Length: 211
Image 1 (cartoon, one colour):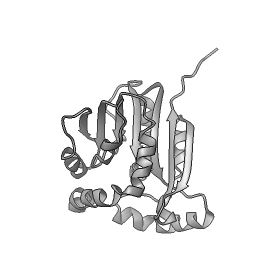
Image 2 (spheres, rainbow, N blue to C red):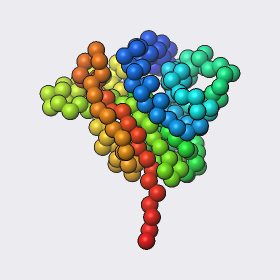
Image 3 (spheres, helix red, strand yellow):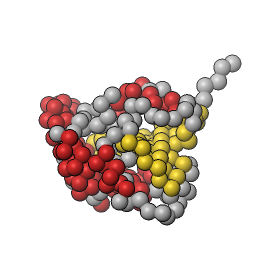
């Protein structure tokens, strides 16, 4: 199983997740990143690297899959973006409270084992008013599709190394304390509805005032 997850999956990920129709969503959300320094959880094979806008000059990429990061290293060059790679789970982020300006995740929340813990960590490390940019697939808005997602989820988790079809991304993010300020839901073109219902948006760590 380790060989499958560390060797086969990274090559399959590059082949299947770096396509024109999938990258439309990546371009859409990453173009909205205004900060210069970004923490990207689930950095994977660095597919997002080529879509960051010119204002981004420093990316910290975290991923628990060593094979993914080895693929990523091949794409990193000494150009305009400084990239730091950390081999670690997103469930325990190695940063101080209120220290990160922006966090990005794309196709990541589906496969984190303890996704609530990871989102709590994002909330913890974000600075007040810091932003979380996300592009994730999850629980659909059609009852029949939801039933299929629940039915097929155990199979999906095995062959896709922990990927879940039926996570309610909006609810998960809001339960962490983050406030969603922008959200777009849609079905991915040319993908089956059970895997293609998308959550694209921005959440913020609001500053609480006490009168």
